[in-house]
Image 1 (cartoon, rainbow, N blue to C red):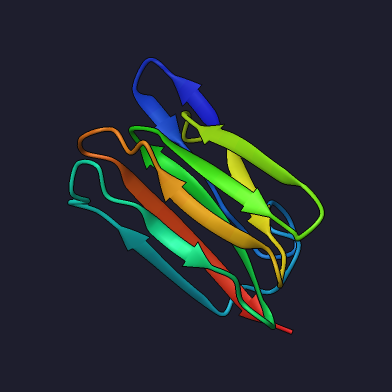
Image 2 (tube, helix red, strand yellow):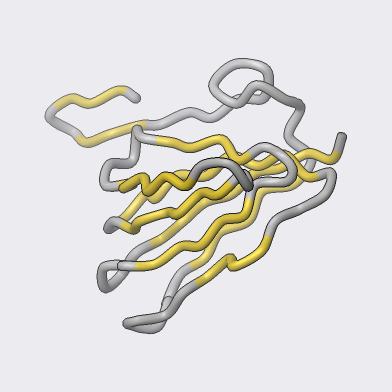
Length: 104
């Protein structure tokens, strides 16, 4: 992430910031207060996500351990490998989440 007096610029490139070839990118916005997103795992999908505006908490569960991660800065990202349950909650008003993924 690059920041100066004009503002910030973040770049996400496959095989660099994201350790796989990006097949699709999408974003979530206008998320309702108190909503919970995710609540699933993918069999073959590897994902990366960041909260570019606002903040959220992500619960990860791989069947052996559970971990909560707070995404509260545009330069902070998270990789979600296949077969990891995830739930996204505690979204602040106006939050915007960006996802990119690949299928193995």
